[in-house]
Image 1 (tube, rainbow, N blue to C red):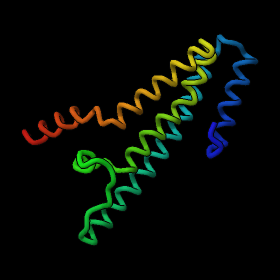
Image 2 (cartoon, helix red, strand yellow; image 1 turned 90 degrees about the vertical axis):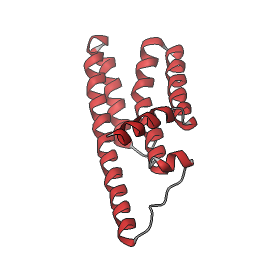
Image 3 (cartoon, rainbow, N blue to C red; image 1 turned 90 degrees about the horizontal axis):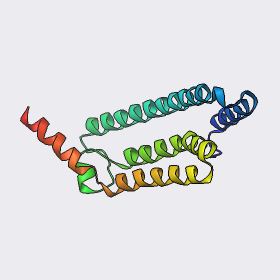
Image 4 (cartoon, rainbow, N blue to C red; image 1 turned 60 degrees about the vertical axis):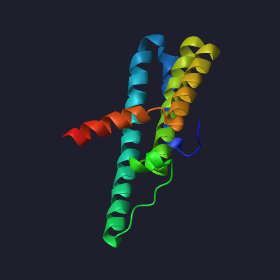
Length: 145
């Protein structure tokens, strides 16, 4: 667990402790409750990130320059920079917390390993730019309109 978010760690610890006390029959409700808190935390973080990026773009436009972008030329052409990549990785790791707990509680070590294999796979595909075909298709549709 990441020490940068002690509130979320406390929430997870409380949910796990409550599950121990109440038993498996309330597991679904506990997981749903925790996921709502994670989703709210993610939404708050994403909102702040979007507002910051919009402010940076407005400042760059006002100065008459292009916003600073890092990444592959394809990412830059589609407006993907370090912020978007970092956000994707951050969200996947944030969601890894409850998914790991669910996998470990239900299936033990094999469930945990399968969960992390999936998380690694999603991040590897994203980092490799394997979704560029989707962006190209979306661009063609926009150009037709």
